[in-house]
Image 1: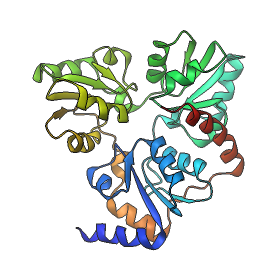
Image 2 (image 1 turned 90 degrees about the vertical axis):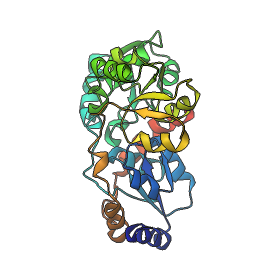
Image 3 (image 1 turned 30 degrees about the vertical axis):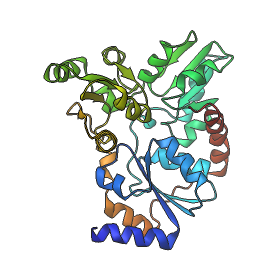
Length: 300
């Protein structure tokens, strides 16, 4: 065990802290965490724990979601400047304008959004329950923000009129049909699993589509030793641990450098100094909680 890892264990005990790591963080961060998973699952896990301090190794909206669900706890972001590019493509003012342009439409917001934006949403969703969330609404017209690719996927699974936002995850958007076909040529027997944040034409090539947690399960079910994974490469760590007899192949550019900003030293600094604390206005906490709570009630 490295000196920095020992220091993290010591500080975690002293501060009564729990360390959460998203699936897209580096392998050493995942190994140092108490729990690894998707952003909402980790936030729920933190809310259920008896820890006083939550260290969220992820991008800023994830720390905000944890704070929304655990307002009485101290939530720390080891790298507070690690911000999700897609979350920045949607703000509260834009949501207000979208409502004015589409009177009567419901607003469904991907959990990958800022706390302020969540205040303007009727309900949030995850990549795993987005279709169920949209189908639960009485409105025929649904504004889906901020991910146009996930929105397009939902539109293909529902009879609702989905009004797409002009936003996307740069990592998933960068995966092209040509790149997937090149991987398939290198591994002709491989099955393809894709995250619904990928472009529609890329999803059309997939044998299975799902959230990161669903992809982990699907990887063990496909009848091929080689599996092409169309999401961020940080997923390799858990996939190989869960399915050691399989070989996983990722597009070379599927790397979120923002997630990779988080290092073990970042975690130590956060625990030593309580830097990167997530602080939200009480009105934002209250407003955002309403849309997140509705999402959790429909969570897969």
